[in-house]
Image 1 (tube, helix red, strand yellow):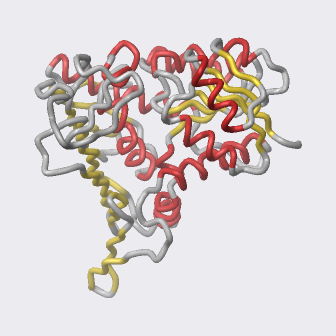
Image 2: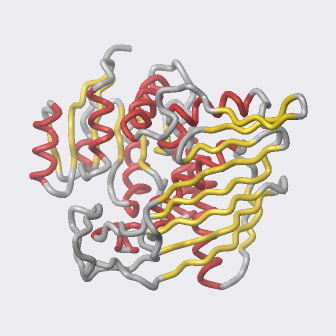
Length: 354
């Protein structure tokens, strides 16, 4: 098939992981970069050896030599760009969340199905972590039995990035749609992707972006504005599935917590596992409880490792060597859950999904 020629749309902070992973895949050439900020597009193109840069993604998609794209733009543009890329005959990898609304997700799924000869992959990077891949082997072999409960948490004590992350119009929401999505998706994926039944959630807007805090740095968006904040500080939710399984989750951009923390545990009839903060399994044998720590290089999730695995998987799928583990339909299901949690928080009622 030869070298896969790639274009990257959106040159903000998350794109760096895509650029680096493509650079370290010897079957890829980065050909073009697009960003609304022309200087940023030009700088990234220069850094990664791309010969072309644009401010209009349509110009990038019009390049016949481009085989595949990564979409790393604001959430509110994912659907529009992804559908245009599919219609232009490109393979598509779109950052999570898939989009902003369930309606958009349905349009994307329909476009992906209409262009079934092209790869469409959702950027659920946590699925590609080495620790997740190892745990999935144990789950698929039946070692944990039927998994019926997951507990997931992604807490930032101080970390509202501001900028577009804090602008609901562009982001679609705060910590739920930005970081909570990671642990919700990974829990759901490890549980075998059961059909969602209902969600009940709460959101809180109590602390703002806490730009007054001194002597402690935190991640800020490129367009950070200390006066801007239109998204929730914190969310919690209970997600129920048709098979009786459930996920309990919470996530925050800012919270009066001792510090940042991440936790993801799953529990089955034969055993349990913890994948955040690091991989650990609990089992039972000969009437004795066993705590097992796998001897692997990456027991915790490593961003570079995860993105490299994700991009390598994407390229393998394009070459016909594998089938994507994160298709459009998964993006739609997760979008239903996210939208349902926001609706539940707004109405104060449990929301039933179909």
